[in-house]
Image 1: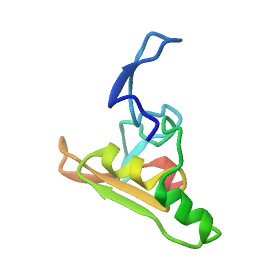
Image 2 (image 1 turned 90 degrees about the vertical axis):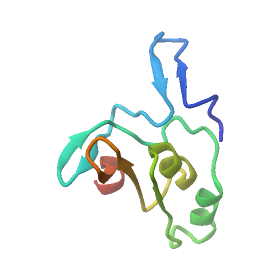
Image 3 (image 1 turned 90 degrees about the horizontal axis):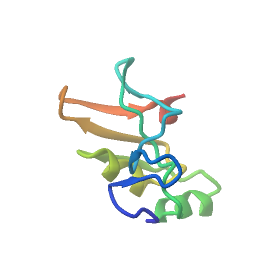
Image 4 (image 1 turned 135 degrees about the vertical axis):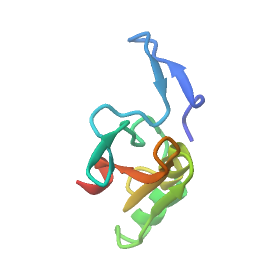
Length: 100
């Protein structure tokens, strides 16, 4: 998928990076902010990206999983939504990228 692993050290900043972290978005649980996630770090297209392109963005793609990376990454860069389980609250959550 174009990712070295779940976590890595950014060579430019020296900071630890989680595979779906994106500081420009926030997660939402019934209007409550949480950790920020999106597929920004994914360099390649996915089967679901190709589906959206092949259908002129009429095809629908929604990622749902217990883990954020298992929901976000397979759904690709252009999904209609992505939802994952927050085990600290017991809620399914999403990111502002998918709802704004």
